[in-house]
Image: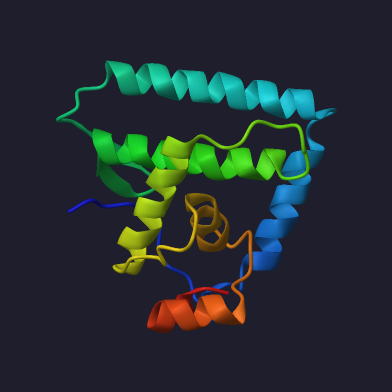
Length: 153
């Protein structure tokens, strides 16, 4: 069974939302221009890719208080890279679309966390946006999700 370190959060668990939003604003303000953030992301992602290529696939990685297989750690990085790419390009109409393989990994991860499939009518992009809280559920979405909608905002 695949294990990720994310946990499902209900509205009751989101008391730290304002603190996190403040952290994000302060972090973003640390860059003089978007180019600085892009360069740091590029450097970090390239280092993660090199480390993943050099890692023993049968090994494990300790991160954020969890022990993940190398494969699950790489999947985690793909999910985070895909979601952050969507964040970075949300208001850039000329930006290239998110990688379809990354979006599919996000969908698979969201379904594993829910322990249920997401609606087949949803694109992988919608799964990423709704599952990460970047897009609110519509009433029809809530109905289609049934009990799984209770963990979404």
